[in-house]
Image (cartoon, rainbow, N blue to C red; front, side, top):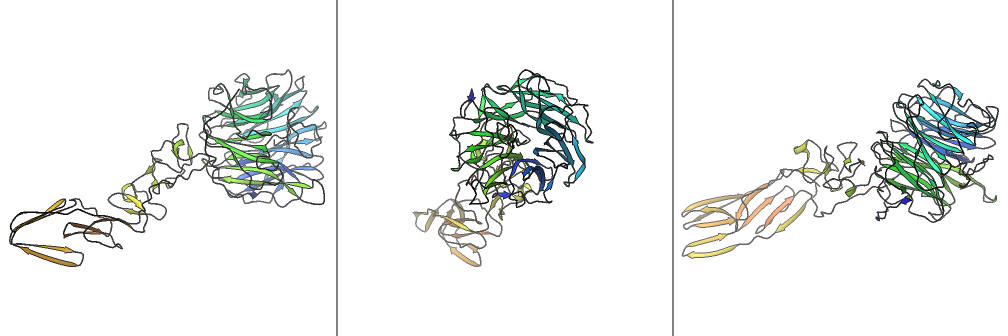
Length: 608
């Protein structure tokens, strides 16, 4: 059973760049883009290029998507086809790419890899991974620890004695294997265990998920490759394909996959740190249910909030679209799904997604481009990306007393910032306690006002430098109690006794009043509010005037002027809303969209 979220949510997309073309201009079809994010804000993309033969390519990009090195071929052997690349990085931005290579090991497909340094330069030669070479070894995936140790998983045909099984091999940070041979990670051998994915923690422990007939199983392993759990069944609906896996820093997991029970759709489930799937049901990811939704990928941030991207047929009005949806760490949707691609002509397919700093993320995919109007189906596929600025929605989804522009929310809904200078959408600023302040500024907290605002003391409010004046009229009451005695009552009292002289100085003028009787003048308040550069005076006749530099003073009224604070008290809530496809699944119930592969693929174009 799938657990749907019935609460209507705003269809709000996180802030994003325009579409960025990642590859150099190329009329050859490009497929299977995969992303990895670096600790310095840059990111890596790998893909395969299909011309006379297929080869795997590598690119290094800035945080704005600008190419930093020329795109280069990863594989050294170029005979036949090399395809389905996948990439992982360590804590120093060194990495490894793995792929499958036709006939290089002497019998159908084999698994190969290449290490590279933080500059994108190759380290050593390409290396052979699988030791069992009979039949076909395919669909490699790789995960890496922060120290550079890594694990590779793949499909191996008939090696376990019955159809396909899922296998792995471990490597140290020096690139040398720590297991002599590949070892089976699918605990069941009866039937077919296929399309594995893997995630590794910083200590080298790892988790593998794979399809086992109609189930998705997860198995936990230690850093030596010993299973520390049994097979954990992730899904509740039969008919599944292409599982994808992301690991949170605390060891919890998010798994997503395609459900093929009826028309295909996208589901997900969280596995907590006790290795237990959360809830009794799957998470229904897609909201648009017409036609097929498939080939999901997932990325998580460091507190477990996650984003899933997938293909959705005809959702943008023209063939396949790339769609995304964001979730909190407990699986609650942050907002409605949204279409990622701006260009909607023809196909947008094979997405991948990676989490970046805090709450940001990058989505990449392939766009079909017509290269010859005179040739039927003369399309090529190019790689595009969008960079998103917020994985967590603002406002009520975080438990601020006010609405903050949050970088991300933690599991309890507390908002966080990457810096203490993050602006609040109440027009003020956020302090180090991750909250919007309705009235503290530089002189009070040591934090500067942002957005060109100035600090108005003593109320400690960050305000605009322009001027708005609010005027309220005071009330004067005159009572005659005896001849020669007049009492004027307003609010506060200044008394002048008989035959006395009272001198009041207002701005640049002086008024002297001498009276033989007693006059009592009561004015609106005994509290004087003074802003920087202002003066306060009493002019008599029931008037108190507070004058701020650059304002106009009126008499007979009470005038309070705050520099530049506008009278619109509405809160700008600036809500910000908001991996690649194994599109060559060998499941019989999925569509082969691997454009040009001549192997027996029955499920999408292997993004990994």
